[in-house]
Image (tube, rainbow, N blue to C red; front, side, top):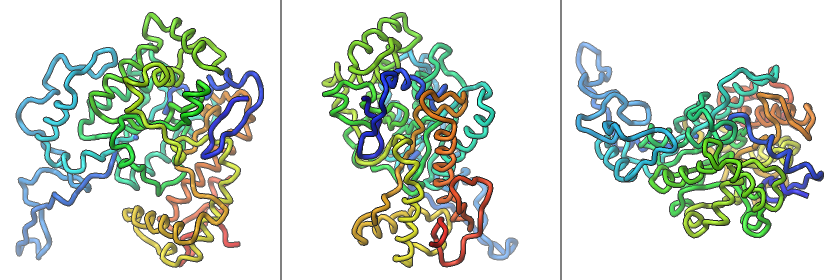
Length: 443
């Protein structure tokens, strides 16, 4: 039996071919920007008779976005971008990256404030059309989900559909994209990678970055499965935070050395298979490679890698989707009891009401039996683009995705005055009655 993780309890799937099945769980091209501190930026305004008292921007002010950073100014003076030897590509190590980033931020002070907690969301899919007739629509909806989450929390996002290394395909394709993003976004402290087939199911949740202040890589996993069982599903490499720093630059190079672009690819496949207790195919994959580094080079890398299991950073969908209606009902009951949660509000202040909800959960004595929303639901084994999902039925995969996407989207639509009363009906929405923040039918 192989353990596949849900939130807090392992889900068991029988069958000797499960490990082989797990090879299909990686998306064909696995598919993230902390809010910016605007308190230090105040736009200069003038009032004149010509504009009848209306505020007008001083012409020489550089363009500033709604988060208070200057987007139209790049001060004179050379930075690492002027170094012809610096490369965005994997296989070309960057040295002194921390110093390079620090100098860039010094020259761009509007980005420096809050930089230590700034997150950049990163996701991707394959560059070719989907084989599955509904695949492209599913990828669009999966991307919409990530865009919604980023907008609500003030994060930037990059959706990539190009291979940044021609030989690093499938699940290995994420590494060169992460590497290039670190160079392209020196203002971001954290790169938040999320596979294309993973869904933000709790649009209110904000990652506890303070918890990771002494770490550089955060993955969903279970230490006992990694270090005791040596299971290749002891963690999930499809959703992770990685700090934009020299440690990460070095780690990505080492991680990539087990990939298909190297002459030792086949050799690594055999090594990883012999190391993992339940890996049944001799192919080097990124997840097994990450576990191998934790097992064999723990002193070098392990102390900077945080194994997260206190919330669903990458919750296995099979143990979650059937409970989404109960979770919705639980939040509806909470909102009935706590009047302030039913107040309508602008989407821009959603984080305030998210904090109110967390406080209400704590003060009401638990989750009421219905559970809290999972942060991320990962559709491991359901490949929306290819349509291939050995071991799962069409109904399980596609209905599960529809429910999870609508569950998340209801949290978005409520701020626009509408709701989907049926999680399996995407096209039907109803107006949300005044005085109700609930996104489920009244019982």
